[in-house]
Length: 60
Image 1: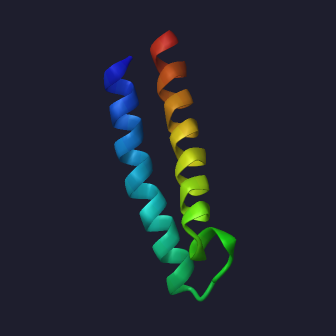
Image 2: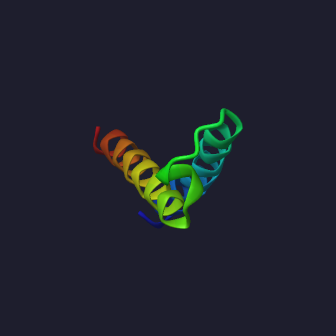
Image 3: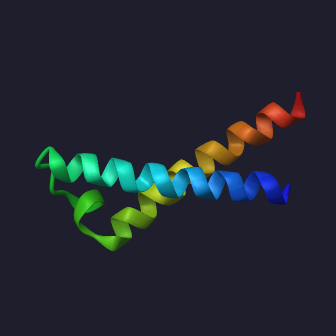
């Protein structure tokens, strides 16, 4: 369980920074790309999705 959490957190951190950078590079300055709260929301959504995918795969 601990290894899945660590991997999910690492992947989510990288993807959230990449998504925020892409939004800002394309001139999209909204709540998600301007604010640290938006960055945290992006991180939490990506983290939960990745964690549930890992959890679903391990149940098989």
